[in-house]
Figure 1 (tube, rainbow, N blue to C red):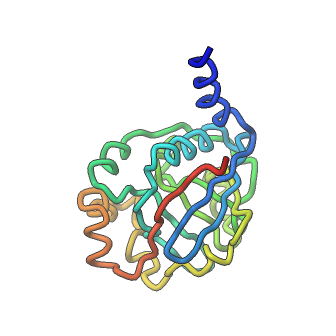
Figure 2 (figure 1 turned 30 degrees about the horizontal axis):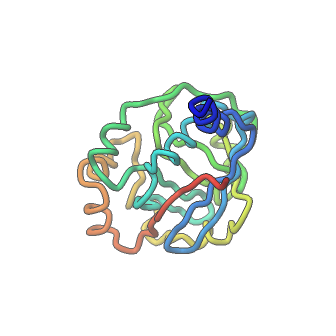
Length: 193
């Protein structure tokens, strides 16, 4: 009986239609509400990464004011490289890429892995037709997301399609902290029970 109860506790959160995740950062904390009915595959991947503490001690490596704040490359290069080839299929786009909405970055169809962005502006005209499917929305403290350090723009993490992120995967936080020391840190991400 105890085993069944334990298994239910593990499975039940993954089946919930909405789940809240607190993101603790050096700029403050904010909460993302994840909606499984918006994008079930993206939701399941995000919650798996949160539960496995994948995002802990990583960086907001691509923040462009008025556009997006991107994270999702593990600070430990071994972890980042292990997850890099683990793609998931696309979800249909059911929500628009409006300010506060959260989606996976990708290099093409069915190429989502671990990188996530939060829209800082209305990116629906560009991102919706390309298949970027929001799976959640910042529901508390969007002001924290808006104040994440954006001074490096695309220079510290843009170029996913052009292979410009290779050093992040090979060297992790050591590379980012050495070259881009002002980046805000993602301290931890936890499901709010």
